[in-house]
Image 1 (cartoon, helix red, strand yellow):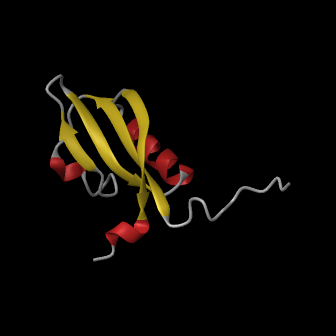
Image 2: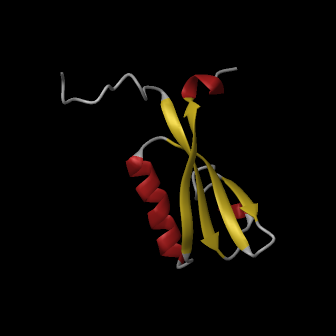
Length: 88
C-alpha cells in the first residue's frame, strides 16, 4: 500500500466551481476572473462558474474576490471537467 496519491486520477482534469458573491459584477470582469462565466442572479448576487485547474488557482480567485471587498457567500465544487473535452 502506498501513501502517495494516484496522480493519474485527476491528470488533465479541472474542477468546475461556482463562487457566489454578494453584489453584482458586470461582464467586463470576465478577464480578471480568468474566463469564469459571470451570472447576475435575481437576488442581487453574482455567480462565477467555470473550471479551476487546482487549489492554488482557486485560492487566487478567492483572493480576487477579497480584493474587491465583496462578501463571499459560497464556494461549491460542482463537477470534474476533462481538459480533453476542450479539444475540437
